[in-house]
Image (tube, rainbow, N blue to C red; front, side, top):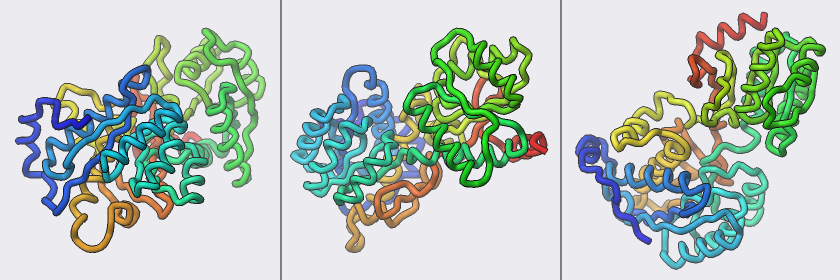
Length: 374
């Protein structure tokens, strides 16, 4: 199915016409392989909306937006890849799940069609792509980057404080905490206490008692936002003064129990407002949309492809070479890809809970946290 500006965006186009990118020889045909139904459909809608909005403000960069369905199964990945190859797209953006992406990559690479994922962080995908010569670009941050940023933050702010690493027993939480612990031990810093907890509980009295007995004052929680909120509430009830830090899982809807102010989080760059995404957030706001979910990453993908498109037709470089040889200014900040299609930048930022929401950690915040660690 071919989409051509299904939203009414005349006012937006007029407002941004002066910022439109310069014309070039051939417009890109972009495939969007996104969930069309089911629980992930809202994320698919985010990707479509971002591309349509960017395309309307920068006419002439995309010849078509061709949609395919991704229901996160290997079969859907193979079917969508075949459809994209038949449609003759220049690049595919999407494949939100590792299962469908892994099945699609060999089919699309056989047709010389690169793929850009906004969500899949698994290292094994990139390793296979490099080994087998698949044309793969990861706009999503690598899985290991989250642990890198968290370990650096713990070293910077908690190095001389007794701290704990706790996780919820899920694969994601356990792997994140283990990766952080390994990175810290490589730099001669060991946690005072390592433990796990049962997620989804209304209270966490035994965990907090163990934390109190261990004498820690800082806790990294490898788990969901709701669980960290419960742990913090229980700590306050027991009179245990704790400062918390968590990973990207804290970027989730606000629950009944708020996170305490001062909670530090390692969040993906698009999760918290920054100067680089101001234009994108304004564009969504003009259409009555909130810059949430995959809207900012998808907008950044459209910016990258639009910028690459301006250079096609001038010289001998193809799209893949342009993507690996350029640093792009995007709503996610600077983006560049290495020879294997991995994003060079970490893709995460430090944020702090303040007044019920996360904002980016400021220089003043960092100075205050550093002073507290002395």
